[in-house]
Length: 224
View (cartoon, rainbow, N blue to C red):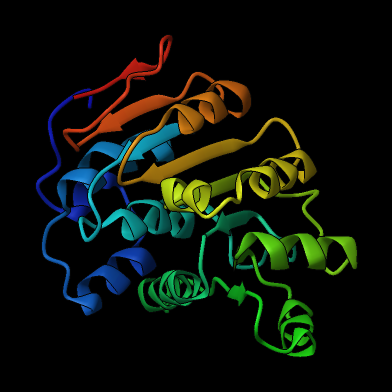
């Protein structure tokens, strides 16, 4: 990261409602992945963030979304793709928890729940949609999801999605989204498939690698 390392959340320049959510969540200082990625995301960079599970990756992308998305927006501005329902529910809960003073609405969609329940939730005009690949494609094909105003897409636990065989679905979802956009990819381990995806769909991504097992992408800027 360029410049001095922030030692508290105030130094990221977050607006007051975001800082209130952070304080009430009991977060006292940012984790390493947050320190390295939040400024890059706020600057509009594409980012590949590699760090182990439990290091604060969700807040690393959730907090910039809460900073950047206006509460009066009536369109989907951010899409978060996750491999499994449980992670989607966790991510949505954390966004709601951190953003309770921001007025931002997040909806989680996944297979196994009544699609009518999710259609009703989407009619409430959320700015953030979190979902598993299959259900996102299904809802898009039903024209229940409008991705035309999406500005940021996050692939969370991309390595797990690829291990589960979702690569084609992920690429299909990315093809639905507008360009230009900001693309963020978070994973615990790096693979050749993820490297290929980064080359194909990301714009000069900055790689932030806080794990030991890595395969470096040629042409990717790296910040340590």
